[in-house]
Image (tube, protein in one colour):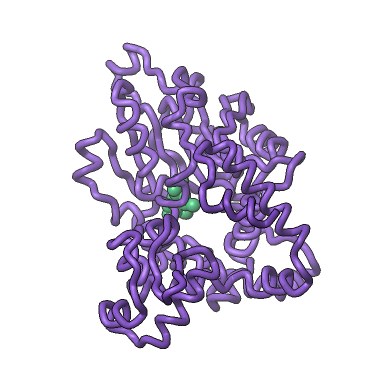
Amino acid sequence: MADSILALAADPPQDPIERRALYEAAKKLMFSVESNHDVQHRIDYGGFPLYIANIAIDLGVFKALAKAAGKPWSITDLAQHLECEELLLSRVLRGLVAYGLACSHPDGTYSSNATTVLFAQPGRESGVLHNVLTVLPSMQCLPDYIRDHEYKCPTSGHDTAFQPAFNTSEDLFTYLGSHPRDLSAAIGQMAAQRADQASWIQSDAVFPTEVFELSEKDIADARALMVDVGGGSGHQSIALRMAHPEISGPIILQDLPHTIGLVDKERMGELGIQCMAHDFNTPQPVRGAKVYYLRNILHDWPDDVSLNILKQLRAAVADDSILVVDEIVVTEDKIRWQQVNYDFIMMSVCGALERTEKQWADLMAAAGFQLQEVRMYDGDKGDSLVIGTPA
Ligand SMILES: C[S@@+](CC[C@H](N)C(=O)[O-])C[C@H]1O[C@@H](n2cnc3c(N)ncnc32)[C@H](O)[C@@H]1O
Protein backbone atom coordinates (compact mmCIF):
# COMPACT_ATOMS: atom_id res chain seq x y z
CA MET A 1 0.00 0.00 0.00
CA ALA A 2 2.81 2.39 0.90
CA ASP A 3 4.36 1.74 -2.53
CA SER A 4 1.28 2.98 -4.36
CA ILE A 5 1.23 6.13 -2.21
CA LEU A 6 4.92 6.69 -2.95
CA ALA A 7 4.27 6.21 -6.67
CA LEU A 8 1.52 8.81 -6.47
CA ALA A 9 3.90 11.15 -4.61
CA ALA A 10 6.48 10.78 -7.39
CA ASP A 11 3.98 11.55 -10.11
CA PRO A 12 1.06 13.50 -8.66
CA PRO A 13 -1.96 14.51 -10.75
CA GLN A 14 -1.94 18.04 -12.15
CA ASP A 15 -5.62 18.85 -11.78
CA PRO A 16 -5.90 21.34 -8.87
CA ILE A 17 -9.17 19.91 -7.54
CA GLU A 18 -7.80 16.38 -7.56
CA ARG A 19 -4.58 17.58 -5.92
CA ARG A 20 -6.51 19.35 -3.16
CA ALA A 21 -8.63 16.25 -2.50
CA LEU A 22 -5.46 14.14 -2.31
CA TYR A 23 -3.83 16.61 0.02
CA GLU A 24 -6.79 16.51 2.42
CA ALA A 25 -6.91 12.72 2.23
CA ALA A 26 -3.16 12.42 2.82
CA LYS A 27 -3.41 14.68 5.85
CA LYS A 28 -6.19 12.53 7.28
CA LEU A 29 -4.12 9.44 6.55
CA MET A 30 -1.11 10.97 8.28
CA PHE A 31 -3.17 11.82 11.37
CA SER A 32 -4.65 8.35 11.49
CA VAL A 33 -1.37 6.43 11.20
CA GLU A 34 1.05 8.63 13.15
CA SER A 35 2.52 7.30 16.40
CA ASN A 36 2.48 9.23 19.67
CA HIS A 37 6.09 10.08 18.97
CA ASP A 38 5.16 11.47 15.54
CA VAL A 39 2.46 13.61 17.16
CA GLN A 40 4.98 14.94 19.64
CA HIS A 41 7.29 16.02 16.81
CA ARG A 42 4.45 17.49 14.72
CA ILE A 43 3.08 19.59 17.56
CA ASP A 44 6.03 20.34 19.82
CA TYR A 45 8.47 21.22 17.07
CA GLY A 46 5.93 22.61 14.58
CA GLY A 47 7.69 25.98 14.36
CA PHE A 48 11.14 24.59 13.53
CA PRO A 49 10.92 24.58 9.71
CA LEU A 50 10.33 28.32 9.72
CA TYR A 51 13.59 28.96 11.57
CA ILE A 52 15.53 26.45 9.47
CA ALA A 53 14.16 28.17 6.35
CA ASN A 54 15.24 31.54 7.80
CA ILE A 55 18.84 30.32 8.21
CA ALA A 56 18.76 28.83 4.71
CA ILE A 57 17.58 32.16 3.29
CA ASP A 58 20.36 34.02 5.10
CA LEU A 59 22.95 31.56 3.77
CA GLY A 60 21.55 31.87 0.24
CA VAL A 61 20.76 28.15 0.01
CA PHE A 62 17.39 28.44 -1.73
CA LYS A 63 18.68 30.86 -4.34
CA ALA A 64 21.76 28.76 -5.10
CA LEU A 65 19.83 25.50 -5.41
CA ALA A 66 17.01 27.11 -7.40
CA LYS A 67 19.36 28.90 -9.81
CA ALA A 68 20.71 25.57 -11.01
CA ALA A 69 17.30 23.87 -10.80
CA GLY A 70 17.66 20.11 -10.38
CA LYS A 71 21.48 20.20 -10.38
CA PRO A 72 22.86 17.94 -7.61
CA TRP A 73 25.30 19.74 -5.29
CA SER A 74 27.78 18.07 -2.96
CA ILE A 75 27.92 19.70 0.47
CA THR A 76 31.56 20.67 -0.13
CA ASP A 77 30.83 22.39 -3.46
CA LEU A 78 27.78 24.19 -2.14
CA ALA A 79 29.59 25.30 1.04
CA GLN A 80 32.42 26.69 -1.11
CA HIS A 81 29.93 28.41 -3.39
CA LEU A 82 28.08 29.97 -0.44
CA GLU A 83 31.27 30.58 1.55
CA CYS A 84 29.82 28.96 4.67
CA GLU A 85 30.72 26.23 7.12
CA GLU A 86 30.21 22.72 5.73
CA LEU A 87 28.90 21.28 8.98
CA LEU A 88 26.30 24.00 9.40
CA LEU A 89 25.24 23.69 5.77
CA SER A 90 24.84 19.92 6.02
CA ARG A 91 22.60 20.29 9.07
CA VAL A 92 20.49 22.99 7.44
CA LEU A 93 20.15 20.96 4.24
CA ARG A 94 19.00 17.92 6.20
CA GLY A 95 16.43 20.18 7.86
CA LEU A 96 15.22 21.43 4.48
CA VAL A 97 14.85 17.90 3.13
CA ALA A 98 13.04 16.72 6.28
CA TYR A 99 10.40 19.41 5.70
CA GLY A 100 10.09 18.99 1.94
CA LEU A 101 12.00 22.17 1.08
CA ALA A 102 14.78 20.47 -0.93
CA CYS A 103 15.74 17.01 -2.22
CA SER A 104 18.53 14.69 -1.11
CA HIS A 105 20.04 11.86 -3.18
CA PRO A 106 21.63 8.52 -2.19
CA ASP A 107 25.11 9.76 -3.21
CA GLY A 108 24.91 12.49 -0.54
CA THR A 109 24.12 15.34 -2.93
CA TYR A 110 21.27 17.84 -2.66
CA SER A 111 19.12 19.57 -5.26
CA SER A 112 16.11 21.83 -5.56
CA ASN A 113 12.47 20.89 -5.82
CA ALA A 114 9.46 23.10 -6.63
CA THR A 115 9.31 24.32 -3.03
CA THR A 116 12.98 25.33 -3.07
CA VAL A 117 12.24 27.48 -6.11
CA LEU A 118 9.27 29.03 -4.31
CA PHE A 119 11.41 29.90 -1.29
CA ALA A 120 14.00 31.54 -3.53
CA GLN A 121 11.43 34.23 -4.38
CA PRO A 122 11.53 37.57 -2.54
CA GLY A 123 7.88 37.32 -1.43
CA ARG A 124 8.41 33.97 0.31
CA GLU A 125 11.57 35.31 1.91
CA SER A 126 9.54 38.21 3.29
CA GLY A 127 6.91 35.76 4.50
CA VAL A 128 9.49 33.79 6.48
CA LEU A 129 11.06 36.92 7.88
CA HIS A 130 7.71 38.50 8.81
CA ASN A 131 6.67 35.40 10.71
CA VAL A 132 10.02 35.04 12.47
CA LEU A 133 10.22 38.73 13.36
CA THR A 134 6.63 39.51 14.24
CA VAL A 135 4.19 36.61 14.40
CA LEU A 136 6.02 33.86 16.26
CA PRO A 137 7.29 36.12 19.10
CA SER A 138 3.67 37.19 19.65
CA MET A 139 2.38 33.60 19.54
CA GLN A 140 5.07 32.74 22.07
CA CYS A 141 3.52 35.24 24.50
CA LEU A 142 -0.11 34.27 23.79
CA PRO A 143 -0.64 31.56 26.44
CA ASP A 144 0.65 33.86 29.22
CA TYR A 145 -1.37 36.76 27.85
CA ILE A 146 -4.56 34.70 27.80
CA ARG A 147 -3.92 33.38 31.30
CA ASP A 148 -3.28 36.91 32.60
CA HIS A 149 -6.54 38.05 30.97
CA GLU A 150 -8.67 35.38 32.65
CA TYR A 151 -9.06 33.35 29.48
CA LYS A 152 -10.80 36.04 27.42
CA CYS A 153 -10.13 36.98 23.82
CA PRO A 154 -8.23 40.27 23.38
CA THR A 155 -10.40 43.19 22.29
CA SER A 156 -7.82 45.89 21.56
CA GLY A 157 -4.83 46.17 19.25
CA HIS A 158 -3.05 47.92 22.12
CA ASP A 159 -3.51 45.02 24.51
CA THR A 160 -2.55 41.73 22.87
CA ALA A 161 0.34 39.29 23.10
CA PHE A 162 2.22 41.62 20.70
CA GLN A 163 2.90 44.27 23.38
CA PRO A 164 4.64 41.98 25.90
CA ALA A 165 6.47 40.27 23.03
CA PHE A 166 7.96 43.57 21.86
CA ASN A 167 7.92 45.44 25.15
CA THR A 168 5.89 48.22 23.58
CA SER A 169 2.58 49.95 24.14
CA GLU A 170 2.14 50.59 20.40
CA ASP A 171 -0.15 48.57 18.18
CA LEU A 172 1.42 46.51 15.39
CA PHE A 173 1.06 49.06 12.60
CA THR A 174 2.39 52.01 14.63
CA TYR A 175 5.31 49.85 15.74
CA LEU A 176 6.09 48.86 12.14
CA GLY A 177 6.34 52.54 11.23
CA SER A 178 9.56 52.88 13.25
CA HIS A 179 10.99 49.41 12.45
CA PRO A 180 11.88 49.43 8.73
CA ARG A 181 13.10 45.81 8.52
CA ASP A 182 9.91 44.48 10.10
CA LEU A 183 7.80 46.82 7.95
CA SER A 184 9.40 45.77 4.70
CA ALA A 185 9.01 42.07 5.62
CA ALA A 186 5.34 42.65 6.51
CA ILE A 187 4.66 44.49 3.25
CA GLY A 188 6.49 41.85 1.20
CA GLN A 189 4.52 39.12 2.92
CA MET A 190 1.20 40.88 2.29
CA ALA A 191 1.98 41.33 -1.38
CA ALA A 192 3.07 37.73 -1.85
CA GLN A 193 0.65 36.08 0.54
CA ARG A 194 -1.85 35.24 -2.09
CA ALA A 195 0.44 35.00 -5.10
CA ASP A 196 -0.53 31.40 -5.82
CA GLN A 197 -4.08 31.65 -4.66
CA ALA A 198 -7.23 32.12 -6.66
CA SER A 199 -7.78 35.79 -7.46
CA TRP A 200 -11.23 37.34 -7.78
CA ILE A 201 -9.77 39.93 -10.13
CA GLN A 202 -8.81 37.30 -12.68
CA SER A 203 -11.88 35.13 -12.24
CA ASP A 204 -14.69 35.70 -14.77
CA ALA A 205 -17.01 33.75 -12.48
CA VAL A 206 -16.36 35.92 -9.42
CA PHE A 207 -15.37 39.36 -10.73
CA PRO A 208 -18.35 41.65 -10.02
CA THR A 209 -18.34 43.52 -13.34
CA GLU A 210 -21.44 45.53 -12.46
CA VAL A 211 -19.77 46.84 -9.29
CA PHE A 212 -16.88 48.31 -11.27
CA GLU A 213 -19.05 49.98 -13.93
CA LEU A 214 -18.92 53.75 -14.18
CA SER A 215 -21.64 55.62 -16.10
CA GLU A 216 -20.79 58.20 -18.79
CA LYS A 217 -21.67 60.92 -16.31
CA ASP A 218 -19.37 59.34 -13.69
CA ILE A 219 -16.54 59.40 -16.22
CA ALA A 220 -17.29 63.00 -17.23
CA ASP A 221 -17.32 63.94 -13.53
CA ALA A 222 -13.97 62.14 -13.01
CA ARG A 223 -15.61 60.04 -10.29
CA ALA A 224 -13.20 57.81 -8.45
CA LEU A 225 -13.62 54.20 -9.53
CA MET A 226 -12.12 52.68 -6.40
CA VAL A 227 -10.47 53.65 -3.17
CA ASP A 228 -8.08 50.89 -2.06
CA VAL A 229 -8.32 51.58 1.68
CA GLY A 230 -5.18 50.46 3.53
CA GLY A 231 -3.99 49.05 0.22
CA GLY A 232 -0.35 48.54 1.28
CA SER A 233 1.94 48.59 -1.74
CA GLY A 234 -1.07 48.76 -4.07
CA HIS A 235 -0.74 45.30 -5.57
CA GLN A 236 -4.52 44.80 -5.73
CA SER A 237 -5.03 48.14 -7.47
CA ILE A 238 -2.27 47.23 -9.91
CA ALA A 239 -3.76 43.78 -10.50
CA LEU A 240 -7.16 45.36 -11.24
CA ARG A 241 -5.65 47.78 -13.74
CA MET A 242 -3.61 45.07 -15.45
CA ALA A 243 -6.46 42.53 -15.66
CA HIS A 244 -9.17 45.00 -16.66
CA PRO A 245 -7.71 47.74 -18.86
CA GLU A 246 -11.26 48.26 -20.19
CA ILE A 247 -12.36 49.69 -16.83
CA SER A 248 -11.47 53.36 -16.62
CA GLY A 249 -11.70 55.85 -13.77
CA PRO A 250 -9.25 56.95 -11.12
CA ILE A 251 -8.06 54.51 -8.48
CA ILE A 252 -6.83 55.92 -5.19
CA LEU A 253 -4.42 53.93 -3.07
CA GLN A 254 -4.49 54.91 0.59
CA ASP A 255 -2.30 53.81 3.46
CA LEU A 256 -0.30 55.23 6.33
CA PRO A 257 2.46 57.71 5.34
CA HIS A 258 5.33 55.28 6.03
CA THR A 259 3.77 52.67 3.73
CA ILE A 260 2.82 55.13 0.99
CA GLY A 261 6.40 56.39 1.23
CA LEU A 262 7.63 53.01 -0.04
CA VAL A 263 5.35 52.91 -3.09
CA ASP A 264 6.74 53.47 -6.60
CA LYS A 265 4.68 56.61 -7.39
CA GLU A 266 5.92 56.90 -10.96
CA ARG A 267 4.70 53.41 -11.87
CA MET A 268 1.44 54.06 -10.07
CA GLY A 269 1.00 57.33 -11.96
CA GLU A 270 1.45 55.50 -15.27
CA LEU A 271 -1.34 53.13 -14.27
CA GLY A 272 -3.69 55.93 -13.22
CA ILE A 273 -3.37 55.09 -9.55
CA GLN A 274 -3.07 58.03 -7.20
CA CYS A 275 -1.25 57.48 -3.90
CA MET A 276 -2.60 59.17 -0.81
CA ALA A 277 -1.44 59.03 2.80
CA HIS A 278 -4.56 58.60 4.90
CA ASP A 279 -5.41 57.18 8.30
CA PHE A 280 -8.60 55.17 7.89
CA ASN A 281 -9.68 55.98 11.43
CA THR A 282 -10.25 59.57 10.34
CA PRO A 283 -12.83 61.08 7.92
CA GLN A 284 -12.50 59.65 4.40
CA PRO A 285 -11.42 62.44 2.04
CA VAL A 286 -12.50 60.71 -1.20
CA ARG A 287 -16.25 61.08 -1.25
CA GLY A 288 -18.73 59.32 -3.48
CA ALA A 289 -16.31 56.81 -5.06
CA LYS A 290 -17.96 53.89 -6.83
CA VAL A 291 -16.11 51.26 -4.80
CA TYR A 292 -14.48 51.32 -1.38
CA TYR A 293 -12.28 48.24 -1.28
CA LEU A 294 -10.69 46.83 1.87
CA ARG A 295 -8.55 43.73 1.63
CA ASN A 296 -7.26 42.17 4.84
CA ILE A 297 -7.97 45.34 6.80
CA LEU A 298 -10.88 44.62 9.11
CA HIS A 299 -9.50 41.26 10.20
CA ASP A 300 -6.61 43.23 11.73
CA TRP A 301 -8.92 45.06 14.09
CA PRO A 302 -11.38 44.23 16.84
CA ASP A 303 -15.04 45.18 16.38
CA ASP A 304 -14.92 48.71 17.84
CA VAL A 305 -12.08 49.86 15.55
CA SER A 306 -13.52 48.02 12.54
CA LEU A 307 -16.83 49.73 13.16
CA ASN A 308 -15.15 53.13 13.21
CA ILE A 309 -13.31 52.36 9.94
CA LEU A 310 -16.59 51.41 8.28
CA LYS A 311 -18.40 54.43 9.72
CA GLN A 312 -15.79 56.74 8.18
CA LEU A 313 -16.60 55.15 4.83
CA ARG A 314 -20.36 55.27 5.44
CA ALA A 315 -20.06 59.03 5.89
CA ALA A 316 -18.29 59.32 2.52
CA VAL A 317 -20.32 57.03 0.24
CA ALA A 318 -22.82 58.02 -2.42
CA ASP A 319 -26.16 56.17 -2.63
CA ASP A 320 -24.81 53.87 -5.32
CA SER A 321 -21.35 53.30 -3.82
CA ILE A 322 -20.40 49.72 -3.06
CA LEU A 323 -18.38 48.44 -0.13
CA VAL A 324 -16.19 45.50 -1.08
CA VAL A 325 -14.57 43.75 1.87
CA ASP A 326 -12.07 41.14 0.71
CA GLU A 327 -11.52 38.79 3.63
CA ILE A 328 -11.78 35.27 4.90
CA VAL A 329 -15.32 34.24 5.73
CA VAL A 330 -14.94 31.60 8.42
CA THR A 331 -16.88 28.52 7.42
CA GLU A 332 -18.87 27.08 10.29
CA ASP A 333 -19.63 23.76 8.62
CA LYS A 334 -15.96 22.87 8.00
CA ILE A 335 -12.87 23.70 10.02
CA ARG A 336 -10.03 24.81 7.74
CA TRP A 337 -6.54 24.89 9.17
CA GLN A 338 -5.57 27.98 7.15
CA GLN A 339 -8.46 29.90 8.72
CA VAL A 340 -7.40 28.68 12.16
CA ASN A 341 -3.83 29.86 11.59
CA TYR A 342 -4.92 33.32 10.47
CA ASP A 343 -7.40 33.59 13.33
CA PHE A 344 -4.66 32.95 15.89
CA ILE A 345 -2.29 35.38 14.15
CA MET A 346 -4.99 38.03 14.40
CA MET A 347 -5.61 37.16 18.04
CA SER A 348 -1.96 37.28 19.08
CA VAL A 349 -0.66 40.16 16.95
CA CYS A 350 -3.66 42.44 16.53
CA GLY A 351 -6.20 41.50 19.21
CA ALA A 352 -8.58 40.85 16.31
CA LEU A 353 -10.25 37.90 14.59
CA GLU A 354 -11.37 36.22 11.36
CA ARG A 355 -15.17 36.51 11.03
CA THR A 356 -18.11 34.37 9.99
CA GLU A 357 -20.71 35.62 7.50
CA LYS A 358 -23.02 36.54 10.38
CA GLN A 359 -20.25 38.50 12.10
CA TRP A 360 -19.58 40.37 8.84
CA ALA A 361 -23.28 41.12 8.36
CA ASP A 362 -23.61 42.38 11.95
CA LEU A 363 -20.51 44.57 11.64
CA MET A 364 -21.70 46.08 8.37
CA ALA A 365 -25.20 46.65 9.75
CA ALA A 366 -23.82 48.45 12.81
CA ALA A 367 -21.96 50.82 10.45
CA GLY A 368 -24.99 51.47 8.22
CA PHE A 369 -24.27 49.02 5.41
CA GLN A 370 -26.30 46.05 4.33
CA LEU A 371 -24.50 42.86 3.37
CA GLN A 372 -25.78 42.01 -0.12
CA GLU A 373 -23.69 39.09 -1.21
CA VAL A 374 -20.72 36.90 -0.35
CA ARG A 375 -18.65 35.68 -3.29
CA MET A 376 -16.16 33.09 -2.12
CA TYR A 377 -13.24 32.83 -4.53
CA ASP A 378 -10.82 30.60 -2.64
CA GLY A 379 -12.42 27.41 -1.47
CA ASP A 380 -9.36 26.36 0.59
CA LYS A 381 -8.99 29.41 2.73
CA GLY A 382 -12.47 30.88 2.41
CA ASP A 383 -11.31 34.19 0.93
CA SER A 384 -14.38 36.05 -0.25
CA LEU A 385 -15.72 39.34 -1.47
CA VAL A 386 -18.22 40.47 1.15
CA ILE A 387 -20.25 43.04 -0.75
CA GLY A 388 -22.30 45.67 1.00
CA THR A 389 -24.35 48.73 0.06
CA PRO A 390 -25.39 51.76 2.10
CA ALA A 391 -28.46 50.75 4.15
C1 LIG B 1 -2.81 43.36 6.37
S1 LIG B 1 -2.30 44.76 5.52
C2 LIG B 1 -3.29 44.69 4.08
C3 LIG B 1 -2.72 45.48 2.95
C4 LIG B 1 -3.45 45.29 1.64
N1 LIG B 1 -4.81 45.75 1.70
C5 LIG B 1 -3.37 43.85 1.24
O1 LIG B 1 -4.40 43.19 1.15
O2 LIG B 1 -2.27 43.37 1.02
C6 LIG B 1 -3.00 46.07 6.42
C7 LIG B 1 -2.66 47.44 5.86
O3 LIG B 1 -3.34 48.42 6.65
C8 LIG B 1 -2.50 49.54 6.76
N2 LIG B 1 -2.91 50.33 7.91
C9 LIG B 1 -2.80 50.03 9.23
N3 LIG B 1 -3.31 51.01 9.97
C10 LIG B 1 -3.77 51.95 9.13
C11 LIG B 1 -4.43 53.19 9.30
N4 LIG B 1 -4.71 53.65 10.51
N5 LIG B 1 -4.79 53.88 8.20
C12 LIG B 1 -4.49 53.39 6.96
N6 LIG B 1 -3.88 52.22 6.72
C13 LIG B 1 -3.52 51.51 7.80
C14 LIG B 1 -1.12 48.92 6.92
O4 LIG B 1 -0.10 49.84 6.66
C15 LIG B 1 -1.19 47.78 5.92
O5 LIG B 1 -0.75 48.17 4.65
